[in-house]
Image (cartoon, rainbow, N blue to C red; front, side, top):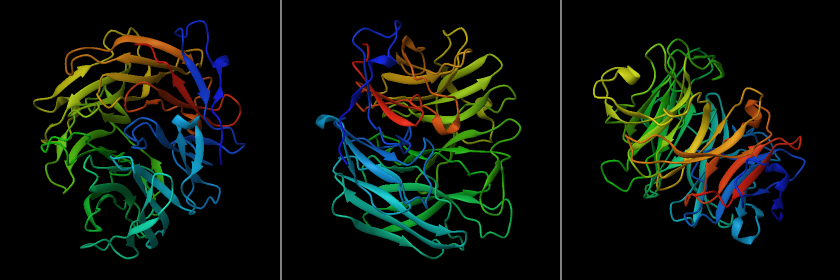
Length: 412
């Protein structure tokens, strides 16, 4: 499969910065999309990334024979190369050196089946099977199924984490859990589990500092309701989700100072601020949908922003009516891209600079374009940046079919 990036100057308008360029990366009749804002799908030189066909912004069906992960080579005109061929391929992570990528083949079923961790070179060649789980996880009676579509890899490339449902199909309110795979030893450990871990969004710290390099950012959904098959009937109740940090051995559980005060609620998206130990979340409250950064503090209880010693900063404090939802930063934590939702239904893409962590609000917030996407879960635009912060990406169904797009020549 080969394609050339399609120039889309028609997606720009009078308010778009001078010199901005927009390209459509995919164009098949099947829906295609980027994988997720927080997913580690780029090579470190910002020249190649993974995306997928026959998928939505929230994943794919494990039984879809049309689903493929594709390598998009920006240095070769956006050429698309299929790099997986298995039905059930899911949750990819590109190795930190960019030479290979990891993914899972999900052949699980409730209480049975098989989950396989595989590795390939970045061009899709040299497939290797690293770990096969076809029985209970070590030291437990749990068998994983309903594999989460996002994995995360440590900054040293030695460990990979992914979450899953752990129920046996007989009881409601069964647990979900986080598995950590040690790549050199080809072993797996279950480090965290319980009924409230249904939508974890696990994200390894990008820091090389040994104090933080094994930290994983995780989301907990208090009050969620799930059935015996792991289907989520209600994601959160009451004061909503909270966000934590846990070391990848299951120790050093900490709290992020967001939400759960009866007013501010975590929307459900958060990410590390580049390679730092600061993270950013999107919140909803009576005064808008804000972006708040914070640092983890010692766990006392699930008190969110009321956690003793909370360290946080409202990045959107200068925005009169903030409506921010999905976002991402560059590798250095100096630039942020986000979407918004305007009263007339438009879903624009914006970019801003980040100042001093913990002190400065968003700076030079700039409108880029209207994505022209419908505000539906299966067409969320999910903007993100290349590691070097020079290129932006988003999804849109503006053509009638979901496709992946790229924005070049960002201002600043």
